[in-house]
Image 1 (cartoon, rainbow, N blue to C red):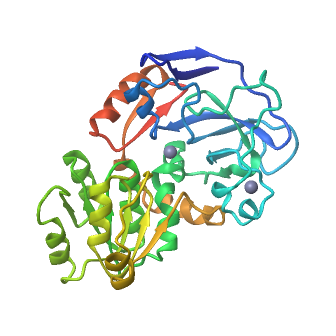
Image 2: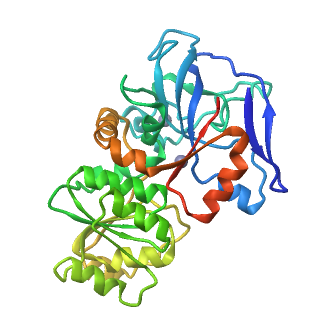
Image 3: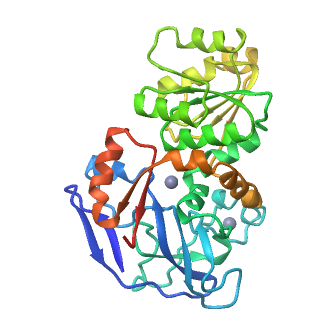
Length: 338
Ligand SMILES: [Zn+2]
Ligand SMILES: [Zn+2]
């Protein structure tokens, strides 16, 4: 099978590997769609990676024992290799599993964990059925496309009475726009990149403001009756955006941080105690919401088609990385069999 790797000198290479074998509850999936996420940082920084990608949708081609999937099933591949037995896994919050396991017993079997590849190995209970009418491309948005913010939208209880501020409109922020619009909420986006600002407006955001504008917070207040957004989802991980998220949310409002970041500057008195903000971190979504996220994807067909702006073959991965570096794209997909 063909797999993409990055050498330390920024060389993007297509290599030939052994197809992994199904065993225990690990099934083999032929990858039809491999969404690109943050892997381009390796390309940008010149760091070697032989395991690129954690998002995929495809078709089950081999199972070792009868289980939750069978050969021929169309499935979304969830990220990670959690244990499946701890309280967190059993409650659906597998993404927080403390006992992430390796699918391999020996170093001889080491292929199949990367999704920038033609086949992937995955625990059968992390393979979610795709409705018949849904394409692999659209279904794959259950990974980081819509999935990254889906848990946050659920935990914040976003509904049609909310004005939600979404800071950072990369692929995760654009997915958050779709999730919030699907709940009937009004969305204000914050972004520098004009391509993505325009795309967010096409997806249904009612305004997109520039974080570098001196009166960004004033503009947010003007759009929200002087109070600030009811709820906010921070999708950038950037310090300026994080501060806007806190300052632009109303008193007693709620904030979910989805964008990965090293540290957060919070004023305990002003932001937490006196303003009464609730701050949450949110990573992915609870597996019990599987049918709900698939219904959201099915119901947002038109927006998802707009959000997926580019598709490349595995042989064109370097071109795709270069595009991601410009920021002038929405969600970018690889098609490993093109
Ligand atoms: Zn676990
Ligand atoms: Zn991802």
